[in-house]
Length: 280
Image (tube, rainbow, N blue to C red; front, top):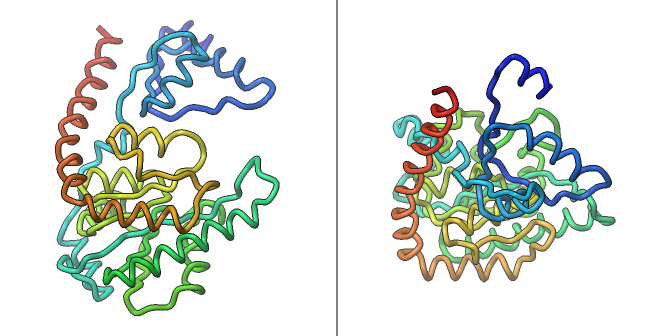
């Protein structure tokens, strides 16, 4: 593929993404073979930049995931959705995204998934006891059962039955989904882009990471590394402790997120400039 690209004089680049760990017999050699032929390669956080840079023996520039550049959709539409579910922007809503996960590489995936759902269940009950409302949100609806968040939400709702737990069971566009999240007081996200949407909406958040370095790296770049835990390490006590700590430091987190928004604009401008330079 990349040989023909060179023959035709085409430029190629890999926009900001997460990389690693590079496990497997031929994984490292395959990555080197492909990535060394690209004109530009970006990581979306420093954990991945270090991992890929070590493998390729070169510095990998870090720019933000394209999801950070998404503009919010209609607030009118977002507020209508809240109203449809008997919620309002005045409510202190804690948004939550969860997902099915197979725990690849682990010998006891069913037990680990049970632990994950059980931990979120206990956190949800703790949030309710503190007087907040909880909104469960669909971040991903497919294309298969493994990627359909509704399956995990249904499982959680068999365990937590409370009038202040609302499932916003909608299939809405990403920009309106981001607008919806902007009305939440706090966010607990497993889905990676749900965390991006909440952070860029200045909503303090906890991330449950899966599938590599992305959540850990992103939260670290926002100086929120103490509010991320990997899905295979999750436990209720840690989630509750992180939530209570974040609420206690709420105003400082909001201030930090607000200051970080300048970094988003700067990153977008650098990406545009670098790509344009390839064609000059």
